[in-house]
Image (cartoon, rainbow, N blue to C red; front, side):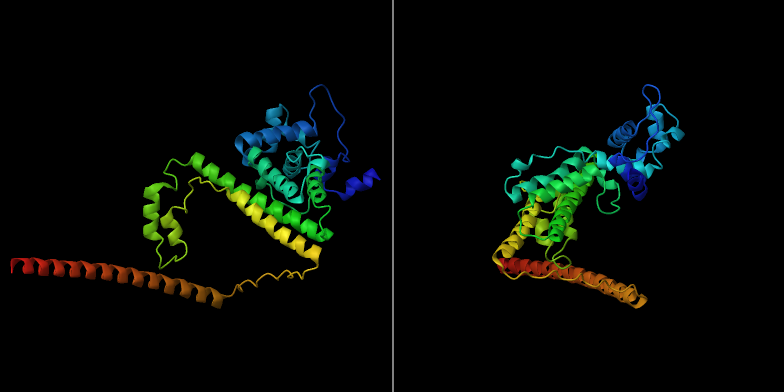
Length: 315
C-alpha cells in the first residue's frame, strides 16, 4: 500500500508525508531531508529565494551537489518542501476559535505572519490544491472554524480560497512596499512636495475621481491611522456574514455572475484601442492648451483692469 501511495504522488509530496523511500543514514552529521530544507529556508530568509540552489545548499552543508540528489530529484522538490515547512505554524486548540468571524480573522492573519517571517514565501508558484501535510493542517483549521456555518462543502472551500488569496495578495504588496522603502535612495512617495508635484500631473480633467484624493494627501505611502488589511478583511467578512444570514433565513441569494468576456485579441480591436488612446492624448493636450489660454486671458484681463484703475486714479 505504501509503495502504491508513493508512486501516485509527486516526489516532494511523498517526502513531506514521509512515505517516500529515503537513503540509509550514513555517518554522524549525514545529510537528511530536514537538514537540506532547513538550510534552504535559511538561505532564502537571508538572501532571497533566488539565492537558493542545489550547489549553494550543498556548499553550506559541506557536501557535494550530487549528494543532494540522493534525497531529492530537483530544486523544485526543495522549494515545495520549504513552502510546506514554514506552514508548520501553531494551530489554536478547537475551543479557542470563538465566533466564526474571530476564528477566520486569526486564520487569515496566519498567512500574513508567515509572509512577514519568510518574505520569499509568495515567490514559490502555486501549482494546485494543497497536498502537503502542513498546508492541509492549516486548511483543516480554517474549515474547523466554519464547521457550524450553513454553507455547502464547496462554499466553505471557496470562502477559504477567498480569504487566503486576499491575505496572500496583501502580504505580497506589503512586502514589496517595505523592500522598496529599504532599497531606494531617493525621496519617498509622500510629503507636501511630492503631493504638490503629483497634483500638477493628476488633473481633474484626466483623473476626475483620483485628483481630489491626491490633493487631500491620501494618495501617498505615508502611514496613516487606517489598517488597510484589517479594513479589507472586515469587508470580506461582512459579505460572508450577509451570505450566511441569508442562508439561515432562507432569503433568496444572488447567484454568482459569470466572468466578463475579455476583449478579443484581434488586430481590429488593437487598432481601435490605439486610436482611442491617441484621441485621449489629443484631448488632454487640447484641454491643457485651453487651461493655458484661460490663464493668459485672465492675466490680460487683470492687466487691463489694472491700467483702467490707474487711469481712473489719475483722472
